[in-house]
Amino acid sequence: MDLRSQEAILRLAESHGRDDIVVIIGAPDPESAEIAAETVRLGDPTYAGPLAGAQLGLEVFHVLHEEVQADVPPEVWDSQIGVMADILDVDGINAAIEEIRSRPLDG
Amino acid sequence: MLAGKTVVALGERDGVSGPAIAACAEAAGATVAFTATECFV
Amino acid sequence: MTMPEPVLLGATQVLAHVPGLAIHGSKPRRELPRHPEVEGAFLAALRSFDDAVAYPPHQVFLGALHPRQLPPRPWVGAPAPDGTSRFGPAGEIMPDHEFLGLLAAVDHFGLVTLDPAVAEQAAVALAAHPLAKHLDLDRIDAATGDAAAVATRPGSLPLHLGTDHGGVAAAVVSAHEADEALSAVVLLDNLAAKATAALALLHVLRSTGVDPTSVDYVIGCGEEAIGDRYQRGGGNMAKAVAEVAGLTEASGMDVKNFCAAPIPALVMASSLVASGVFGRVAVVAGGSLAKVGMKFQGHLRHGLPILEDVLGGAAALIGPDDGVSPRVRLDSVGRHKVSAGGAGPQIMEALAVEPLRRLGIPMADVNDYATELHNPEITEPQGSGDVAARNYKLIAALAARAGSIVADKEAQAGFVAEHGMPGFAPTQGHLASAQCYLPHARARLTSGGGDRVMLLAKGSLFLGRMSQLSDGMSVLLERNGNDDNDDNPKGR
Image (cartoon, rainbow over all chains, first blue to last red; front, side):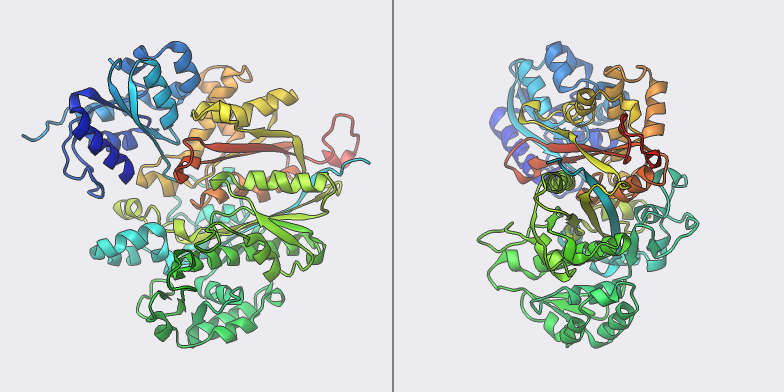
């Protein structure tokens, strides 16, 4: 994940309280969704950025998760997401994120 | 679920972009604190 | 006065195989010093020239086969396609020792020093090159010197050949000790772009037989920004390329728009011809050294060679209607407006759907959609997926939504198979963004069976941190004589 994004997430987590934050990702496939989810929950797996070793455990969803869609007015959903919901591997992406969410945080 | 929350919108160029995620989150009543789009090609 | 119809007179592209320069790509340059243990694996995973020539996507890039004729993957280790050669119908792939000589031949500021043995080898090889008489080979002599000594000067950069990191083959100096825009690595980026663009331009002049002095203008659409610290993207690569290619009557300028730049450049060139401002306009783009080796970590993780070991280059020539060449339909231009926002489907809708709806052309009547044709064998190991395939799925989904095809998975897959193609281009975004299809498009719309090709490109403006938006542009190329009221039999 971009280092500037990691830095911004770290600062938000420090200033806002982690329970208040929801990270919504737009990754195009399960691999890249997994990396993004892992980074904001368990720390940067590439050890390159500010979130290396930082177990923030933030709530994370893909934007195509049904719980996210349920919150978004249909006309906004249609104009912003539209056919992307038909062409991305939604089940694979959500499964990859769920796998990361199921991993326990240390301590 | 999103109403009143602070959202980080991490889009990808080939999936859903940051601004598109942010527009959805705002419409759902969240505050978007950070928006980015990544491009890996 | 009738407006001249702009046509695509010719399109060529080149590759320079530069394994020795791969460590100077932006990612290897940052990562390898931090992980010295990886450097050995990186060097060991570089490809030989023969492997680079035989790599099927490279042969597609050189026009030897159509993208849809690619063999099943994996392409690494696949047998060389029939007719594989260093020189293809669309251009050539140049080995690194020749390319170092070419760098010296286009260097007008004494930036490059070549080791004497390397200079000799390059001079002999380039003297036998089909374009030799257009290259200023005297500059190779002038650049010969103690490269190893020059490389030790503060701010200088040593260059190597192949995987031979023992000897210094050449050195590039910085042009100003305090100006990052004139550092050795930036100047090497720019010289490499200049050399590849010039090589492609010379090829397109040769293949079309067009007199270099008849070209009025050159538009550069590569990714590099030339300038100094007071004007980092000042330009003008196009004119520098025109100069070394002998276009003495031309001027030029650069168009910047991240990876999308080639399509606006093509549209501008065609508009200049259509308006009668200029007669012939060239569009050129050199390779992006910064992007070489960008996904090396993924390639090493998957036991692949460093697949980003080539620089691309491309040139296209636009002129008034010659009765044969594909027309550039300026009434078909699609653009991504500010008001369309940043969502992917809206970009694609603006580029692929709206222009055709406006013209009343069914989406299935476009034979080929040329979009971002990044080679998936390069992008997938780093987790970036198959960019071309995703684009085609999106186009097919939008075609279904627009009612152009049946809205079921099978019909959409059929649309992708018929109108899409596998990605094959090096991951230098401007080359991948439709531009790499120009030689194929020209062949399809002249000797081949196609009537229409849509070119569409997207650019990630948000990377520059001035806007969260993307941009994009599209344009149709059409077989000459394709008008309904045109009874010219050679058209079909």
